[in-house]
Length: 538
Ligand code: N01
Image (cartoon, rainbow, N blue to C red; front, side, top):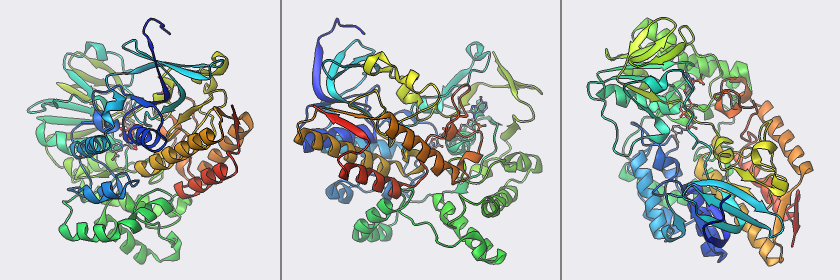
């Protein structure tokens, strides 16, 4: 680590200026009066919504639930335009929040963190950036998101490709002109499913390279009506309470009935109604969809039938509906005319299970069966999720141990918040917390508020150092595994929840599947017991 630049010292350094880093700055600076600074790699706020500008990018959480809830005034003054907000609108919202709370003056943009080292003697974190700037602080808080490290698969020949290629998570700010172009898209996750219909409408031809077929339920996006807005204005408190009390942080509750409590005809009626309503609520149709495979089969069969009904070409329909995992065992996408896009004459799908990609050539993609000539390749291939954004910070804890060493066999921590050997480091929405299994702003607010409460309690008691223990981590890792094993989630063997999308990554189920409300109670109890599972000292 270079010592050439002067060290700027703070009480707390926060890495990342997305939803989590912005709120963490506000909470530490404006509520506790700390000297806090955010270091952000991008040139603006927004995190995920700053980077993910691909065609069709919009949120899968309903707009009225995809915002901060910590300020009643902020909640009341912001108006979303659609049921599912598009990326530019979410970015406008986050800029509005940054301006409203005067956050930008304490954010250093274009400051990618390249290293963080804990100095045991001084009880300080030293952080360096790509530009060579050097900062120190007592507390280091990562707010780097779960899905911010792009996964571009190492397909041989990419460097020889004569056309252009893009990863959806690093999309050019000026957009990409697909007009008349032959486009190849790899990946059919939530991102790919959003991008296909929009690219298809512009491109000369779109070939979708599908490795794993995916479920999707219509979003039925539409402008928000004045009636809905009026309802929201008078029910805001109830909506917030629902989001805080449900397992997934969404503004809807999960039905209490089980799949086989009703007969087949009634079940079909329920699924049809859920399909007509659209969105992530489909998985809330029955209580046992995520825990009972036989129950889940009824939902998967329903959606597969829908796909076969929408897609007219039987060959394409067979490829798209050949889904090998339980519904919602991978993050379930929602879409705007995804399957319908395959009825266009300029859209085709290639089944990579039958003809895997062999290489990228100067003129396109070569599978084991044939060459596909392309002008543009879109990698909708996801992220090195959850651990990737943390490991690339090159964090070094007490005794020189790196986070990469500590997590060589997969992430281990306590409550998804702290790692033994890394004092005063907090990881917002870290692995082992509900994070991606929850509506993200709700998960983020809970972490930010817990961390802020913890730092406040330490300062009031004159304590300067907090570190979790090996025993606490062991117990929590067991709880994370128990919670995952009680669901069907680990059954999707190729899921990024398990790290399976990145070759060589340890296969560990990363998010906490025990539900957000339950997790919140655990965290609150830990705090109420004087931060049980942590060692605090001065
Ligand atoms: O990424 P993914 P994503 N060869 O990992 C395929 C959130 N999100 O960016 O399944 C060929 O889900 C891969 O195939 P397989 C949301 O949480 C939120 O779509 O590994 N194919 C898969 O089809 C989501 O879950 C919103 O076999 C390869 C695809 O690429 C998360 O982001 C919107 C491959 C990757 O799917 C990630 O979604 C969008 C290879 N070598 C996304 N490598 C919101 O609304 C990968 N694939 C908030």
